[in-house]
Length: 259
Image 1 (cartoon, helix red, strand yellow):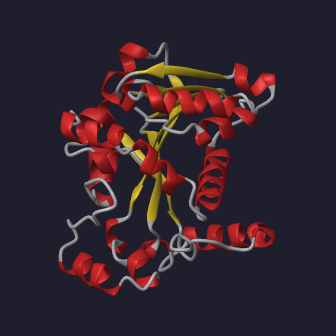
Image 2 (tube, rainbow, N blue to C red; image 1 turned 45 degrees about the horizontal axis):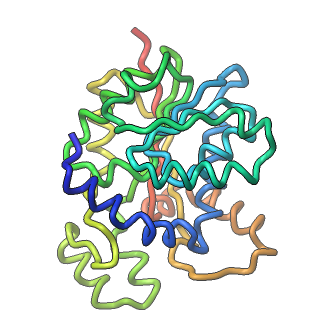
Image 3 (tube, one colour; image 1 turned 135 degrees about the vertical axis):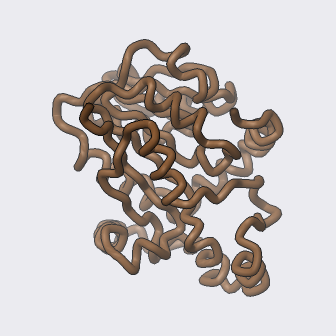
């Protein structure tokens, strides 16, 4: 289970983290993740669960594509932010998003039925022991469904700091990968291999993994008129080595192995 300490830190710093989600790279990040998900989702896939859905951006993007999305989050403040964001959407999109308060480990009790896609984005990096959460995700995934995990890529922990010219922090991260800069809440840097192995034990196999934020994660601003070109470059880089291996985030897509 996620410790109460980590949960309380997340909730206490929700406003600060909201600034991080509003950074320059955020639209690029959500574009890339959504593009990957829509590439893998069959047309018939309609039900989505967004575990730890936070500010609701991913849920809204998927709802715009016609999917019904259940956002599960333990923080009432977060859910209110999602509700406020939905007010600017079309009535059809609003009607496709349901908000549920609770922790991801309790998803099978709090959410009804199984889902064609279960998203768990920017969550596992705040969990010390990931198996209980991953087990919960697997329990609500339909037999042919997908699980999407977005998390920090431990192989590139110093890239953002180095590219931003924060030399001492970058050096500290290389010497001690467990170190977390003071402006962020503590996180666990679970390696891609560890997540993949944990999912294998739950009978899920890796379909694809993408690097997210190869060239732009460190930017504080960029020319919005170039967004289309930037996203295409990031997409191509995130598909192939060595570029994806130095991306700030790793996006992993899993499917259940045939019985």
